[in-house]
Length: 182
Image (spheres, helix red, strand yellow):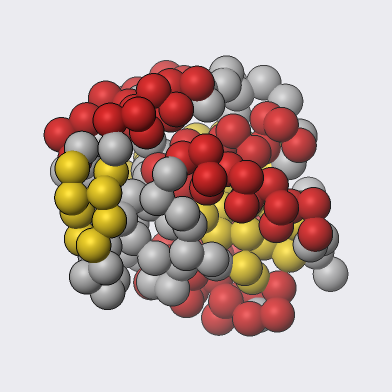
């Protein structure tokens, strides 16, 4: 059976609510959820190595992880499930340049200005990948209509309410499975 790769958001970790739900539903052996490097270019290299060394057929990404998942889906023509994806992280993360703490374990890291330029270089138009985009209208971090516009030729579900963390991902597992297996 092929594996799912879960990509977390900015300053987050691979082990969180969404990865736990994915592992519970698809099985721990079939779900990879690494802690990504803070540098966007290092993160992409790391993700590409995982794609090349594991039987990955589907990528799930949340927020910044959704942006990375879109890049990977385009490069490798993969299926991607995007949860409240970031569409312009070079803009939304500009106020985070400097020292930050990871939400999951308080690890300190420096988010450098050059990372914003790197993110801009990673932008791709969603053409080759196959996308299921899950949005929540009450996302307090990102404007869901930007993702709705960018991925308008793909399957989009907008749940009215919710938040940036997409807390009720468990309610979408059968839909994710159906999309992954089609």
